[in-house]
Length: 271
Image (cartoon, rainbow, N blue to C red; front, side, top):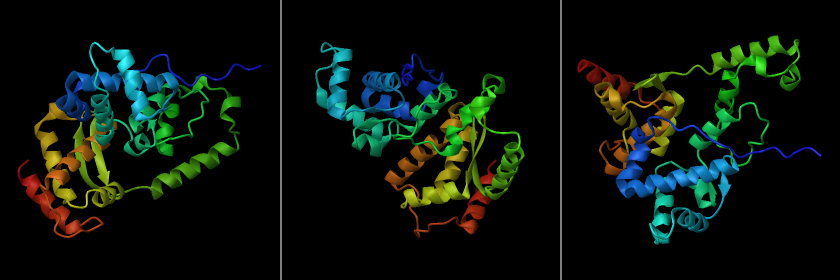
């Protein structure tokens, strides 16, 4: 009888810029060391199980209380607030959290990189796009994968490459604005820009993005890595949207070329 495949992890990497992550800064600002302790306990519980856990916030709060101990935390309601806040700022997927499922894109991306060569089932509650889920396997050394595992014949390879080339040509997108990151420039393409305009309906998104770009140009030490760019952009826009800093005059749903060119010209004069 075959031994069941292990889905949980024995260890997982932690980024050295963990404490510089905007979401972690928000969590610290709101709940102090308790917030980060709770978050770290939860992701350990998740990775022990795989890339998600099915547990209600109430049950999760009780599990955390048992781990930390009654000496340090006795308020279950406070733990529930911390868990909910982690969902609000994007450390966990908010919609799945409402369904008593704890996971996130970041958790799944790290899990996917670690288990790139393992044939684990990653279909349930999977949040990564196909391109993201293939990243780890693309970077893996080819000599560690047997021909039987790849299941691709020599006749199929040229056809596959041809399709990939055609796909890349079709998927070329217009860059609206670039955000400086530690390891390159993140391009906000037209498709992502339009998603942002639909999400942050009260904000002139291009103005907010240009201010983010200026901020990162002026403060290199605050720049995020490319893999964290989406979270940084959406956090920045969320703050501007909540404060009404750049109110949208007309609720446009697509990219305004004239507005972008005018704003970009104004910004570039200062650099």
